[in-house]
Amino acid sequence: MLIAGLLLPGCLAPGPSSAPGARVRRTEGIAYGEAPIQSPRADFPLLLDLYEPAETNAAELRPGVLLIHGGGFHGGGRGEPRMAALAEELAAAGCVVAAIDYRLAGQRPVVSPAMGEACAGLFRAPLRGGRGTVEAAAAALEDALAACSWLEENAARLRLDVSRFAAGGMSAGAIVALALAYGLDDQGAAAPLRVAAALDLWGSAQGFLECLDRGEAALFIVHGEDDPIIPVARARELAQRAQEAGIACELHVVAGAAHGLELFTTEVAPGTTAGERLLRFVETRLVPPHP
Image (cartoon, rainbow, N blue to C red; front, top):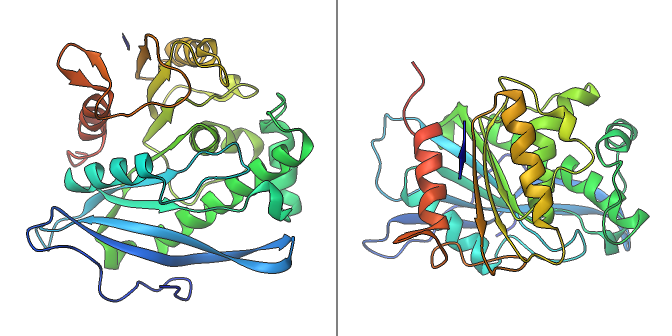
């Protein structure tokens, strides 16, 4: 359906891994920052895995994608197989991809007062898991902003075109990506990188739908029709709000699917998978240089 190894922050790991003839180079465990937690009381290292095209024009700038894993803000990680598969495919298509970890509810993350105030407005609608989950969602958004800052600071060495940037995620990660793309500016906060495309994989913007405004990120949504965790109605409401705001949006509702699906085997049209549609969307929105 169409509707209009641990390193210091700022450093890249040596020796990215790629097999001979591989399409993608992956560098694991880059530290993009650290943030406080209370259980145990510590500054927690924030890590990302970096995926880059194995063979590219050395003079050419590449678009960037930030990927944020799911897990209800209580679990999950950057190496989740579906996340890694998506990162690989995006990098093979020419993007620089950062798949991040972030602080989780069980760690009792400490959020800055400014972020806590911003998220009090963004996450008005209840999230599954109660108050600790809401606080963890704020921490996840704060960590995603730190990852954006890291990408901006390292743009030259990554040959990253900061004007061509997407943020996406699965489930809880999609909630964070949508808040990054549409919600922060309405709370008086600014992201280090402007999001040109948002990728919502079975997530929700409940509580900040009104934050979608004309001129903001183009939106891709895929959602299972029988999702028992985040109802498909949330996806339809989001797509409708995007249409009202004049935001380009592509919505795919997968019949019979529950919460989460295999992007590159689940078809959304005869002979076309959800993953293939997502890659086409990213290619259309990010890969061609802006005039």
